[in-house]
Length: 405
Image (tube, rainbow, N blue to C red; front, top):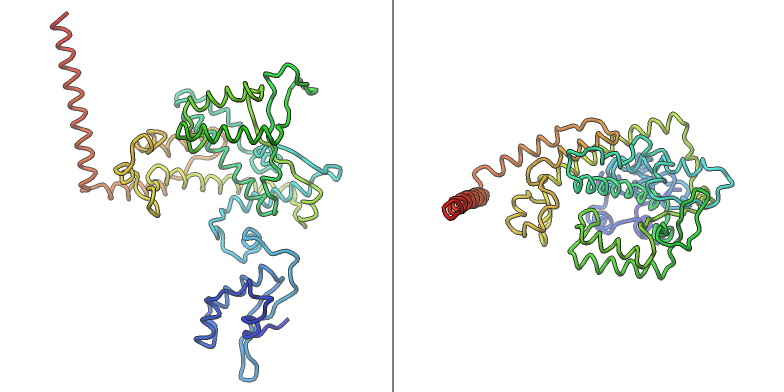
């Protein structure tokens, strides 16, 4: 179908595709610039099978040649997968695109007698073969030389990052995660609960229980100034554990995602992958996910946001404006060892040795930024004076103790 420029910019069929700035440019110049043509083609490809710009001649005006209309608009992930968008467009990471391909293949490969399936988010990723090369996170607990609180933080952080991968897959398949989420408890403290064939007890929480639990957790977060579970203090965890026991007769709560497999199969076409393709994609996922995580580690160690300001700032700039208690969950960030410990734990669960190029570049920038910085020199001087005071005070106290013994 041929669509001339005047028609493209005036027809209601294209009003949700064409941007106002393109119309303004055309009215002002009477033609389209190259980047505008490419932008229009990209937007058209979301909705139509093909799109091409055809130059005008003396006898014919320029127009767009477009194919048949798609049944559903392509998502950003689809656009990246088809090569219409560059990798990492709209901040969508490469590892997410890889995981989506594998997840689609997993869905279409399920037996036809599987109508509905429910699993935890991490088990969905494992079933799809996405995280098959990642070892059980509890192996981290064998590394006794690393503080137990930091090990727990690491496991929560990795789990959260992986769960985000599944959330991405569901979003791209137009599945509303909230509608598929079920809360389960282990009924460990309930003598009346039935056990399954393996001797395990569990039950589905009803809507009222879930609502009450969420309200309690929200109040608990405010009480203990907790923003993320992975950074929660022991008091928070103990009170939450008591709530589970007293109100739900359980030791633990978990989330499962229940998916309508029949519907998903109808929405996913030609997605099945051969075994060797899945193996190759799994290796690519491990590589890209590790790159993403390493970049995150570098940023966390050196930079952070300052409330009320845009962008990222060096951590020493933030510490000058915020209370130390709200500044960093772990000293590893301040002592420049966060990247070291996180990548060490990564290797324990199956990742390769980290590439330190990005880290070294950031460390160099950081070092240059603090040289001859008056604020930093003042902070360091205050620290040094405090150390001297404490040493002197303790020495004096020791001498006085000896004197009056």
